[in-house]
Amino acid sequence: MKSPVERSPHPDNPRLLISFAHPDDEAFGMGGAIALYAQQGANISLICATNGDVGTVDPESMAGYQSIAELRLAELGCAAETLGIRRVITFGYRDSGMMGAPENDHPDCLWQADGDVVAGRIVHEIRQFRPQVVVTFDPFGGYGHPDHIYMHRATTRAFHAAGDPAQYPDQLAEGLEPYSPAKLYYTAFPRLPLRVWLWQVRLSGGDPRRMGKNQDLDLQAALDNRLPTHARLNIGAHRQTWDDAARCHASQQNPRESHGLLDRLLSRLIYRHQDFTRAWPQPNGRHHVEHDLFEGIR
Ligand SMILES: [Zn+2]
Image (cartoon, rainbow, N blue to C red; front, side, top):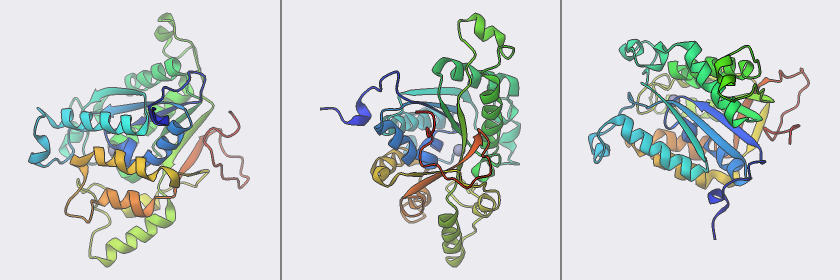
């Protein structure tokens, strides 16, 4: 008998589009929420804009792979299957590296890509897949990564453009129709666990502004730039699937930090809830925290 995650969702089930930048954003960022919706039978499409070429990888992880991109896309395939993502679209841009790094200037990197073109590719996926809900990064890209910020901008723009027949009209000639998704959310670090984590890092003499295997995770900035929570999902029942998906990205775990920094993030700090900021429809000021991204549209 197949597990729920292995069952193909019915085409009429809710559709969720996740628009991210790197192979691992789906697993480290919101793996619990993806597992939750996959288990409920949602159709989930993932855009991964880069091949993660600039990630730091130990030589032993490279066995059997020609390039870091090939390795990381294989890890993405493993995580997507584990989480129950049926549709993965890769744009193939080069990873832009940390803000200010020389990789930002590489002509093939996402940071240098034409904004019209990238937004158009996202519009194409929105018109084809017709999701009710779209999720991307917040304006700060979670922790300031240029590729995250880029995908925030491109996805937000595409979200509002996809329903407008005057935008990207050549796609309509291909047979696609204008389509406006109902809701747009940004991922949000859970605030209290982030504070606890900062405190732990400082206590152990670490630098909270240079965390993670690629030393590009700035916890203090992540806290300072965090937006309000409008949706909080209880993903406690999906931790195992989430952990399994995170383990697919073995090349991005840091063995020098106990059990891997991101593993700790997953298992100790964000283990019960995942938070989201609702960008559209704009919150009306009433204090109401949703517990389902499809609330009001199911
Ligand atoms: Zn990323």
